[in-house]
Amino acid sequence: MKAKVLVTRALFPEALERLNATFEVDYNPEDRALPPEEIAARLAGKDGAITLLSDRIDAAALAGAAGLKAVCNVAVGYNNYDLAAITAAGVMATNTPGVLDDTTADTAWALLLASARRIVAADRWVRDGQWQGWKFHDGWFGQDVHHATLGILGMGRIGRAVARRASGFSMRVIYHNRQRLEPGQEAACAATWVDKATLLRDSDFLVLMLPYSPATHHAIGAAELAAMKPSAHLINVARGGIVDDNALIDALGNGRLAGAGLDVFENEPALDPRFAGLSNVVLTPHIGSSSRATRLAMAMCAVDNLVAALAGQRPPNLLNPAVLGA
Ligand code: GLV
Image (cartoon, rainbow, N blue to C red; front, side, top):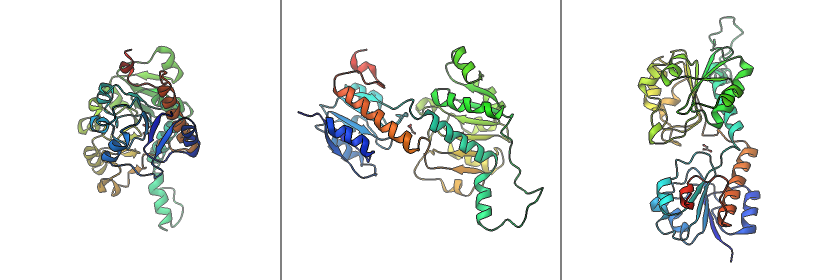
């Protein structure tokens, strides 16, 4: 008998084909998040599930799913998982690290450059027909990226990929992470560890690459923004909630901070309307990993995890080895 799996939301046909070959698949073909009650109902009687970051998997979702063995997130971040509850239920949890590092680092750089050089506001101005003629003092002076100081808060794989890209811009790269990198890793991305106060004080561009958890909630709030240079730009492609959006809106509005590039927000997909009124912020809809190749690789990685878990093997990206007694 084939194992039964739930796929909560539209994936790629290639991924579905692989799942169908091995499992009996309960597939939501729509690209809409299922309501929590429906996820809970459809997890009942399943052996495994592929979930997206818009699906909350917690004790309530698992309450009726006694036979569930694995939940496999198609994302590197897993703050949509209550890992303690999943582990307590004896269910393996996995994510998709590695395959999205470069694409997400590219997105961070796209936002950084767009914010520094005011690309989106300038584009809007040209479209609006406001450009009357070239001027030397054109009112569009931006911030130089080359030879500036790039700060990175959170130096995992994606943070290191962001750092490596800085060498082409002759930047000084500093970072803060709870754990300092091995000397070889620091050398590979030419980055220097500093304490958080120094990172905030010295960064011309501060890129956030932390995972979201209660410990990182509002890691950047009013006090941290006040400690940054008024000429600095803040880039967040990690998770909403790491930044206190209220404090950021104040800082951007009153000139305390020069600019921001944001791919993630506290209450996404709802946008605080005050962001839309600011010309010194670039906004994108959580597209950090969004190239076709990378999203496909993420889906396939989640499938690999599920196939391994339901074959009785340790999945490659197991988040809670405690369930295996390890
Ligand atoms: C995207 O946000 C991810 O965590 O993969």
